Length: 202
Image 1 (tube, rainbow, N blue to C red):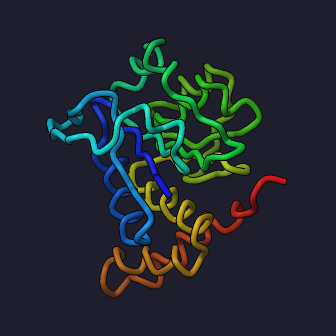
Image 2: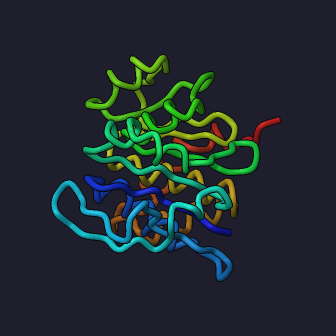
């Protein structure tokens, strides 16, 4: 199973790397979790440089695609050539977006009938695109999920793991990364956020 975490220049480190870290805690030998970018390297909003682990042309064949957030997302959605490379299909892929990543999904037409979660800065732009924005950290409908707020990346990762490997695997991954002395609270909170949305589309 291949999980692509779409990461663009100006990315928010928390959004891409929290998901990467938690998903890799649950990774089975056949899992591949990769920072996926349109260029060989991408530079974060704070100057951190990452080397892409996978190319953008792997997105169409990925089993899971998570769209990260960042300060350059509006430029991303205005780049027609770049957007044309994002072939996402919710009938066969799990698709998630973190914060301003919701703007990418909205631009691709994947949120027509799906309300979204996003960060407060991005909210007006997502609303302007015709999408209802919820005042909550996580929401999913079928195979499409969104999370709002950097630390909500844990919910997006928990949802992916629970959908692919079950809630026990999701709980184990969260328990591993949660603070000592607060592990059960973190696990319970994460599962409480995602459990209502675990049913696959009919």
